Length: 443
Image (cartoon, rainbow, N blue to C red; front, side):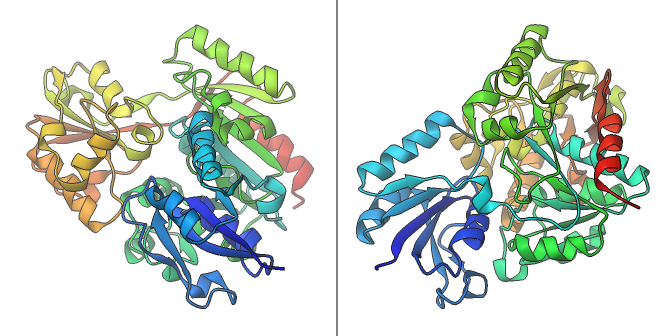
């Protein structure tokens, strides 16, 4: 029987995991190519033979998604597997229509085909959209578990944008580890807060190998999800974060809607800044699709190191990149700080943007009067620095999870905004995790 010819549509994360779990060493399939989107400069590379396995001695090419129809016809592809996250259901079916009209079948892999089984208990923290507050939730979960005397290892959803052969298994226990392994801004934003809190973080490409190494030093693993993707490890407790600033998205975005349905606990975050009717909409939607889930309400208050410096100033708000881009939010913590502390105005950086930063604004036209902190490589980090320094503002408000001043040289004063999760009412995460530990961890 001829092997089924496959293309995997991805964005340097879930696509590689799906390949490793289902297609690598599978004699029934021939993966012709990956396609790439969302992340700059990842196409026109190869998934290397060291990772692709014995069936692919030359590796597997990665093409821009724009070439999808051309590739299907050129290679007589039988099946296309959609393997990236935080897109609307409309978006998914538009891609399905492109695939089907080109002659191939369209496929989504399920949890049973893509989840790894852990030997130690797993708490998964995932979300229904990028920017819901998943990162502060995972930090809170890890902190609470460590407070119970447990050895906690965080495994982060993949962001392998560099040399894949050097990123098979990555372990981060210090800032120096991130510098040595050439982390991007996006990677540092996720790893550094855990490290500063005394944690160990794993990430990379091959999550079977990552899991086995993480198990060796953990009483419990916290899966820290990316975007709104599903866990790679089968969880013993699944916590899903929702955002009432985007009510209804919990039902209409892939695969966040799947996360909502598998949740043991659903956090309705940002209730302090959302409209009550939008909070109620999210609550109603949770109850409709997952009535057994425990609902926890929480706030996401901001903390500014010196808010007085903002008052009356022309401010440049620098926000978490992914939250603004494929998360589709139009503001973040820096904008909230500017409003709270009386900035004279927000300076629009679009006319001062350079290189790929200017292209980001063109690709995401909803972003106005603030700057997304995209930094997927050394060149883009330099362009971000140049854009900040070219923008005629009195002060920079840094609303990113890491302190950008550590990696950028700014020619103007700056203040940093932080935000943490604060649950409201009972049960809270402490109660839920104590019960989880009683049932799952024997010490």
